[in-house]
Length: 43
Image (cartoon, rainbow, N blue to C red):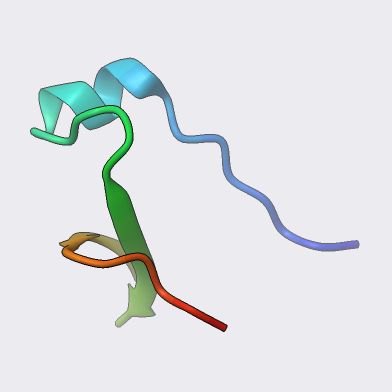
């Protein structure tokens, strides 16, 4: 079993994210940190 998370479009929009933007999601100190990236991550 793999953990998964559904991110709601409305919540991301409220946080300032726009459709088509690339983000990085990291876990830091038991928290998810969502950061806008300038270029899509390769790999």
